[in-house]
Length: 435
Image (cartoon, rainbow, N blue to C red; front, side, top):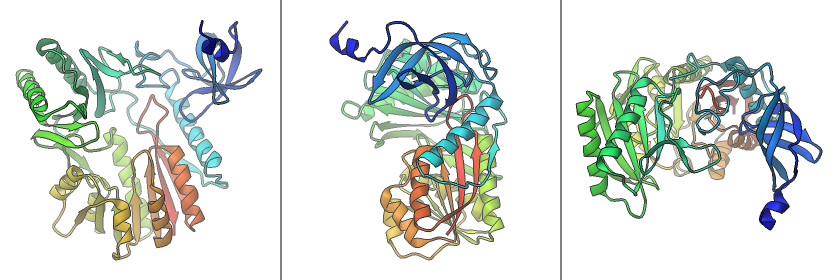
């Protein structure tokens, strides 16, 4: 054993702990003689023995060795790949417990990071489906291996069927593996985002190719091959695209995926963002509109608007909506579905906010997982919109931004949580603030 391993290894015999709660990131928290320890794939109330206990930066981490006593919140995970595959973290808990702990983990972030007290009660919206809800997923590819990353690793778990994906996407994964097996591997191919339309069942594919060695010839060969495979399998392939690992477009073929929200037809071109759980997204958009209408908002500024997920339904409901988005593909999707009097602007959010523009009654921000850049939070604080709705999939960056916005004078009125991602620790939040 190396000196480094000797130094980092804490126990020679497996310690035993009781799991007290779940924490951001999804692990269970227990107490050892040397302090707290974080253990994945555990549930509050479990008594477990630990292995591979390590201390990194003053914090202990461990793997579950044996389950000595099971929590009442546990269930047998129905997926045989659970625990190895990194796609799910909480499938070992019943769904009601998952919802309760998502709310608790969310509150931990708001109180621990934003130091917010006297929070309003949180309304939690479950997903109608625990499984087969995920209509968009990124598949990792290494040689002939296609799947999700192994938990805590960059190796790939090549599951035969993912329980989170509808059957049409599982079939597409099978087609992709068959094509790679028959046509050879492509070292420059890193991943593929597969997406399914809930409207007509069509499929789109977005290939991610190595930034240094990828090229359009490789991309077109892969897209042509999958198009032939789709035709033979009678798959309705809406469109394909290829991007490098920075997100720069390499090639595109075909059209966009049809979506529908609040009876509004929308489009998502391959590689552009849309919410993975269509049924929960409908609830999310409806609740955002309800909050806007209850405040008699007549004009809306939709920042990080994507394909118009919020602004198109708001415009259909009678509001004057302006969408701002840096992604050229998403802006094209939004414009293709918009009425002539709607405006969708391709621009970085901070640059837009630095300009003079007509003040809106309300603003929605739905930034990426990294949250709002500091300059955007400052500009929103200076503008003091009458109503600000923040939509987020990452509690830690949301909490950081809420601290900045409340310090600038915004007051939190309502918080709602949406289970966009059952079987994982992730959730989607909607926070309504008064300026």
